[in-house]
Image (cartoon, rainbow, N blue to C red; front, side):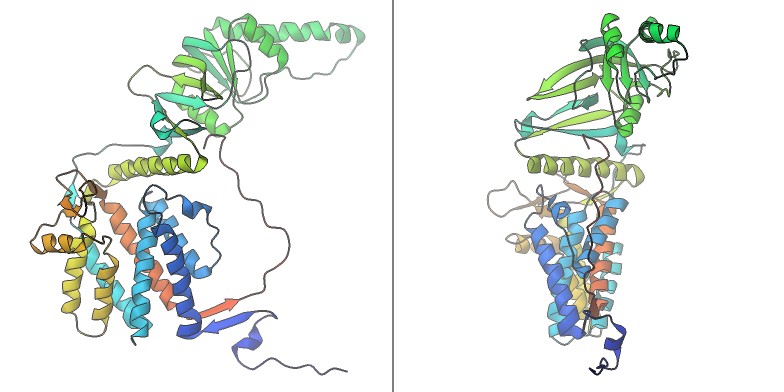
Length: 465
């Protein structure tokens, strides 16, 4: 009989078979830093328009996931600046690795970073924009249609759906609209005797015709159904000159009701004046080889506006959609807080300059971490010396001039290059918190992967989103 060999005493005996345990700087902290640095470098090389790469990456490392979580927090809080969080957190960890190998402890590094963060949030250069209003991001809708180029993208005051109409009527002007959240089809009923069975087909036709005629008599010439559109209903809609559209997405149905001012009805009945909506133009169109239904309002302002994005590949359209969403969320954030900071790297260099001064006057080993915090803010390369020279002269708004031939600087505020104060404020906080959390993890437990099928990924809210 084989003897049972007990596990080694200590922490290992509490783990399941197949689990691994790592601890200390070499086994845990440096490995976590390496994983986060690789993730940060991946997105740093794609910084700017090609920023949707993080959505395509399936991050498994727990330390790297902390950085991803920080970007999600930034997305929820501001809606922009997620790449700044990831790149800055990676730079902080890169600088922290140098300090740790020089002999500083994790506590000294994290305390230095937290002191630098506190100072950075106090000295953010702020200018106030004269604007306050209310804004809902759901008022802007994006529809991506493959083909042509980005310059062929367009804006529609209203809504665009990638689908065709159900009947023969394809165009309607100055149209009253009725929206049903139910199918536009005859309900199957029981037949109780032979006479009803014989007359059932004719009675069904008469019933459907009466429904469509009653709707048409109210002046509604566009019907939008949230379910199946029956063949008989389609026939009578053609007869009475009614345009029919089927939308299976409840999200689309609600936004269309908002765009045209209609109330979704749960039963197929003739709508009242208050329940019906209105649109200046409803028509079937073709963009590229894709059929689309357009609800366009002639007035300058519409409750819903759709940006039709064109592009030769899905990746290009995804990048454009990300840029649009960033702009929309930036405007939303401005309605909450109108403060702005100079862009083009001007804010980062000014904060870095003042934090470096703080580090030089701080006693203890934390001063080295404070200075490394400042180095992590250096986002420019060739123009770094020019930027620092300008900021030493007191020119706090000078940033990188990307339009200059070679290396150049400009006054970002004069050129209208501004960043959200909230994006910088929360970006600095989330990035520093994530980096300090990663540094404080000095033990890693890796359990054996469980078997079984992977869960299915959640689908999009509708066909166009």
